[in-house]
Image (cartoon, rainbow over all chains, first blue to last red; front, side, top):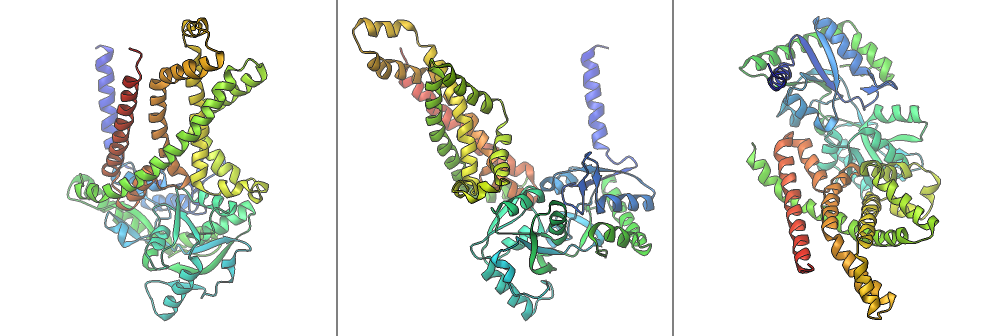
Length: 283
Length: 224
């Protein structure tokens, strides 16, 4: 057999392997750049709440798992292209995303908040501690009005393709000047440099950054939940189908839901949340 | 293939093409000045001056454009004292950071293109001028520079096309050029194939225009 045939055969063989990502190993995609949800340590190994939770869930499911890294802006396309089988990347369950993929039940609450550099005029904003957009009501309306006035003319920075971007572009807080970044790290950098007047992300993403960098980043305004912010963070999985892969995806969803129930009952999620967030964000 | 998505995305991408063209033209104009300046410095006989010019072109041709943008945008943004100077008015804007990076980069390449064009002018042309009693200043302006510009057209045409594609890196510093808008659309529709194909098509069309423009100029100013 000449070398030519060998090459072609090995290429074909590798293509077959790519198509069959399942075998019995579950591949879980995460961003590795959204501490404390998921990030990387100095050696490049994936760490964080979701990395540990994924290992726990896999242990409960008695499945072997590998956790792979994927840029946030390509997360859902990569899931659809079967680069991995599930997403655990601080991804909130929203109606928008549910048009394309499906989610397990939520495993943790992600509370969003605005952040500024100490000394910003926004610090004097008078708002309630938190608002739930799904509940609505006059207090929510009044808060959104306050925010609209406060954010007018300000550069608001956020990560691209997030619930935070959706909210800022929804018109709920008027027409704001939104600037989007590939990663939360870059948002943090430009918030401290002063290019951003204010930033929106998970509250813990800012507090974690302030803790680790020592920069004077402080939260302002209310915390946000509901509405565009979705209903907690869940495992993102492909929508099931009739073929073999679709059946497998449907089974994976069931398995994850069961495992999350068990982990919750055993207090594993709470324990990990307290370890990484400093409070119990489990749900 | 989601053709509806392609149709609704097209106007958004086309209006983003305006940003791409603005970035490209501003960088090319500034880059051309830098290129001329450094080409002249490279040809200077003083070793300090021509080594300095060589160092500049070596530095900017020897490092990736993306790294240069990151240093100018994120790097300089972290220097605290810089933020209290007038420079910050410019460096605060992602738009100007991108233009500075692009102009410095294309300036380095342009200086090399012009320098080599100058050096490849046949000595016979200059000697012919001298034998006619034309002053060396007039020889420079009327013979050397026009010939050098004509010589450098094909290479400079390539540089314009490379720079045009390079502007796609502006999206990494939050600018909404063609690539930036394409990424934005993909982040909500999760259909990279359709959107990026369309974005690629727009870049290809721009290359087509630039290519033909340069070809026309080459023909117009040919020596034959």
